[in-house]
Image (cartoon, rainbow, N blue to C red; front, side):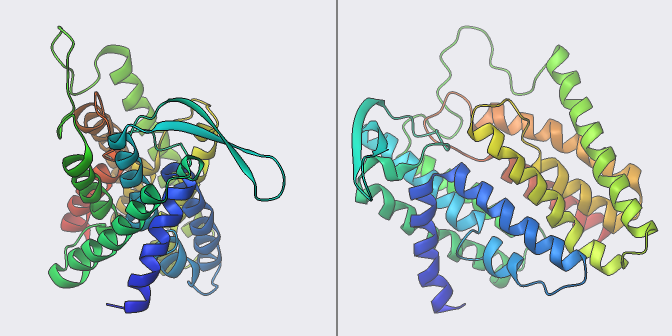
Length: 308
């Protein structure tokens, strides 16, 4: 454990809270995209581990800090405020409406509440420690960063949420935990097409002469990063799909098995599992438990158990 990284994790958590969980995760995607691209081309692998998944932009630190800070802000029932730059660093805060703690798109800097940002820093440190426990002490054979994101979200819900782990369902009809009908078919098709492009693009890279070790080491991260970057469109209101919980496990399944069909099957399962976690943990609630993170760590555990 590095004390410098632990201190930096507090800063990473506050940074994630100030920018907002989704915006800082998109930044993670850009940094990971650059780092994985450099590594895949044979360059040094310095950006991915130290920045994209380190104390600065690591999802278990920055994203998780933003999630926890949003949950805390919702718990305080403070009103949402929009920052308007007047001149220089001067910001006018305009009162709007009650803030929903499950909103991961909102930059909490606009609230002007230092306690909200500090909560992000605290959960940044918690995320660093939990990931260290999972990866270095227990030695879990899975994506411990994703597992930490899920754990941190659950802790934030239990500590600061008011709707319980599974949300507070009030409708009269029986609650759905997985989509049905056309939505179910769409999720299967989405997994299929994402699995095809991820698996067969990986096969093309190997066929074109890219060293297999480079593909195994960097291609899954590259796929994850591309998916993360596409969420910039979701941040601005476009209805793009969330796919990093599909691309990362599918790419891992392909590079470890060497079979594109395995990657496609995993992609379909990930699409369905992500839908299940969305409806189970992230509906009718007042904080965010990340469905992609839950999907990634569970499917990665299965993939590593079979192929690694």
